[in-house]
Length: 130
Image 1 (tube, rainbow, N blue to C red):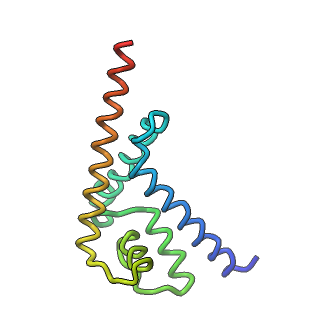
Image 2: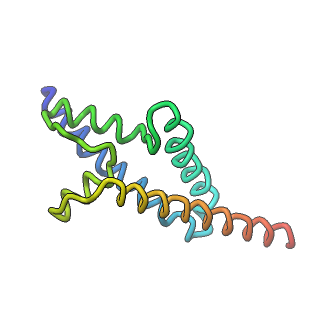
Image 3: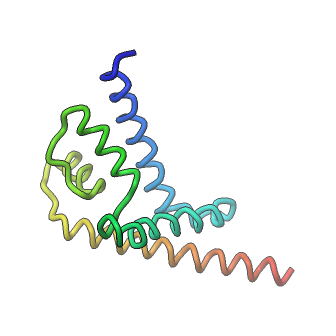
């Protein structure tokens, strides 16, 4: 397998993984069996955005960083800071305003964290009262 094929496989794997992570971050709080894991994952995501973001830039995501390294190695240039912006632009054919995308992502991420906290607390309280 040559380097180009390996990079293409990595690019595809990052798309699948990253979209799965985003979907789980947005919806993992819905199901009782995934709520605790969701709380850990969404907390880690927000820690990355803010904690690592203090070092690398607000909204930093290591998955995006690694994926962009692969895309650059494949010859792609002018990649935005936001993974979501990149794919919104690709899918819609429209160039989304970066600030709008960042606000949308932040609101949805914080909303998912709050919902996860509420649902996990409710589950804990229910379990405690049994």
